[in-house]
Image 1 (cartoon, rainbow, N blue to C red):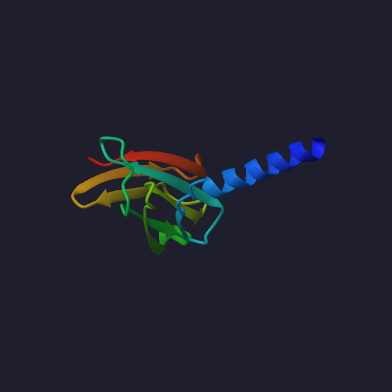
Image 2 (image 1 turned 30 degrees about the vertical axis):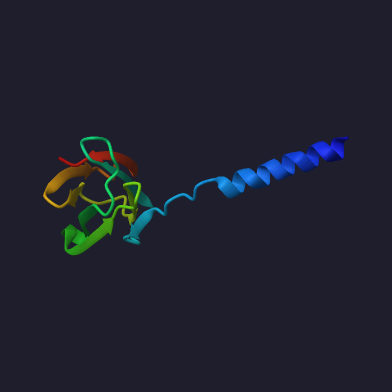
Length: 123
């Protein structure tokens, strides 16, 4: 009897795994300068996720901020993107998020918020 119950449970589990929708891949870019990160979820004013919105940031690092790096990543089909590998000791970062003529700006003070999460609405 218990073997029958285990068999039914395993069959149900296999069917549930087969019918589960695959997760969209997260768009990620890494600066490879540290352990900090910023996660973005980009939506329209209506709340719909924005596919292929651009998240751009310029990182100034090193002595007196002489070294510069520009990073750009597009959002996935569910409007998500991540910028990782950010240095912990850097000036506040200014992210420009855009798609077509709609834009938004987000600022991250990495020293106070090393792993930030932002919900961005394009207007």
